[in-house]
Figure 1 (tube, helix red, strand yellow):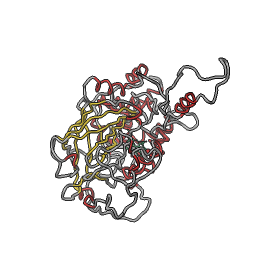
Figure 2 (cartoon, rainbow, N blue to C red):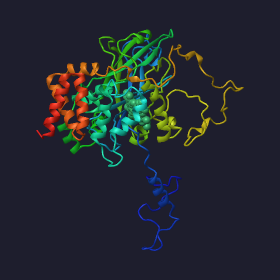
Figure 3 (cartoon, rainbow, N blue to C red):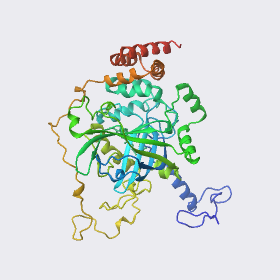
Figure 4 (cartoon, rainbow, N blue to C red):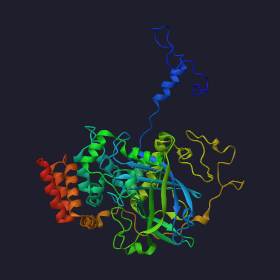
Length: 480
Ligand code: HEM
């Protein structure tokens, strides 16, 4: 029998009519079911992610197909055929939780591998690089691309004013304005860990590593006109595509590759390998195949599993570590901090976030602790019970670091343009035309000063890039 109860389990006797003093009378405070129903409703909205608010998630697995144990001792890579369960969330970045999917924007590509040594979160994007080199500028980036404080509207002027003042952003801006700027769906795009991370092998040797995921569905994109028409009929096109394809048994797959750099080569590589605005060229560090990621199960509940998912670059496992990339270092703090605010201090207990291996920790109490709080076990260490001690066997090899503490100017490296130039010159004339036209449409609402600054940056990258953008802007402004 389907019986309605209150949250406390008591029968609800009437879910259609409030209790009032007479048929036309005011309501009675003793209608506790009405009070409970409204009070719960009043608290249903939680803060959205500060960026990447709109997303879609799915469960799946990662299977190793190639041996990389000479680089890492991480058990998820320990043998060919090894399978690890995972949860993944894709997202758009600038739009809010209710934004349309088919917008020109980067896409989030976040993975949570439930390994036997704890969760490994690789929180990447569909682009191999990013706008910035220093995390101090990240809040500014988001303030510039999100809504204007006065008008409450998105502002092309704010957006491009900021981007064009940061010449190192041109590489990322070129990708967003290119034909890849609006993926057709989350299934039809590559994914990247973007930062340099580290691998530690069984001999405790360190390698620098970058992760790439190539879509097996093939790359497919929308142009501005098709995207606008699609948004007119369906604001959830990415979410729907992922959900429907998994429901239909058409499971999306990506091939994982790594680029490996021996630790010492970081000092002599022609680019700073820890600069997130640059790639490691494939000719210098080729892609090594590792395995296959497949998504094959939709969540049962979007809020519980997708909205409450909490990914953090700080979540690594033995054999995988961080790097000196300043952006990565900044992210190590920001995600857990945001999630303690967005979901609460015990968000790691929410089933989608909970590790699938035993957890032994001395954290206690806090809002919404729901796992029994470790009962009567000691909550301090060291203790006389020999309970839960640190594991020095997993200590990483020391990393040499040098230099005096200062606010070092990251603009000492002023090579902003050589890599966007490589990208621009790899494009066919038709792809370059699309880049010019997409840029002209996107920058249309900006001031002439900002447009001129962008044209100047493009010209420094490649005179043909500057010329093409200048012409496209002129034609767009004349309404041609
Ligand atoms: C989400 C901060 C750069 C990918 C977030 C969130 C914060 C944040 C606070 C919301 C987390 C939450 O509420 O759960 C930062 C900072 C950055 C940075 C401070 C730079 C200093 C990046 C970069 C990438 C990236 C470089 C990709 C390579 C993502 C993704 C999400 C996200 C995919 C959504 C994760 C999900 O699906 O839940 N970021 N971010 N972020 N960020 Fe970043």
